[in-house]
Length: 337
Image 1 (cartoon, helix red, strand yellow):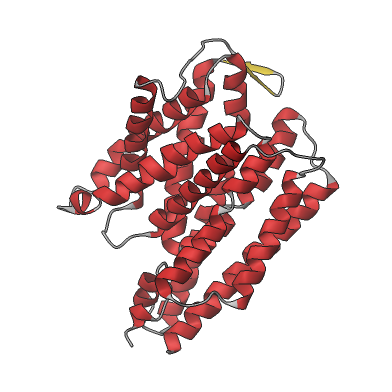
Image 2 (tube, rainbow, N blue to C red):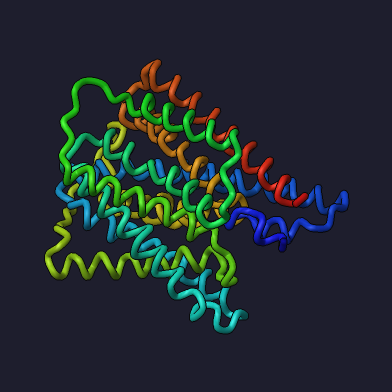
């Protein structure tokens, strides 16, 4: 049986690249894994900054649709120069990657965020987040279906630990009445999140991560503008100053942070991390975004994390570690088949 038929879809390219079992190859492989983990964690941290800044803009009169459109549109333009430079010597790579770009921008960026904002309009934010992050389970199921190999036991343990930790971090207490429409939007957001990690890990077309991030976000912004034009996405902006941690900032500073840090850097680092780690591990590392969000809420908004949330954070980190171990064992077993 060919090697690519015995491994998971998101790790096959890594195995092929790591075939020479020399000391130098093993050393280089270790460095690459470290870079992938660092990129994925930094991506989660930068994504987490969107909460306080977006909340500050919404308080002044911005609509969620306008915040998202400005965020991804400007981010796509920020990365456009590096993206064009990255593809200059790769003839035909953009044409081969059109569906990849559209999937990333329209489904994983625009669709996911629109679905999430529709969910939070109908249910508590914590419940909407929990539904969205079910996307990491969808990633595991997708890889299972594509590879026809059951996840390693450690991976399944990691899934359980991470989801339990997520429930604790979100601190879902009290009776919550679920709106069926809101639940549907939350599940659609989960699909968008899963597509984000799967598409980001897909490097078969040769499209550089920076090009995927830039072209994808521009495609997503175009889709959002189209929805706004037909009235399907409410729009509205304001020029009032925003307040963060007691400090007044001009509105454009908040938009700039959302575009450069919470989108351009976040999506680029996420694409790099997913390419190096594979979609399964990258998706679980992405759960740390919730931990960073809690930390930033503490630092910028004075919202102290509870002991239950801290315990949940420990479970999430344990789950990420278990998933990583499970994927490494699965990769090792596949390489010996």
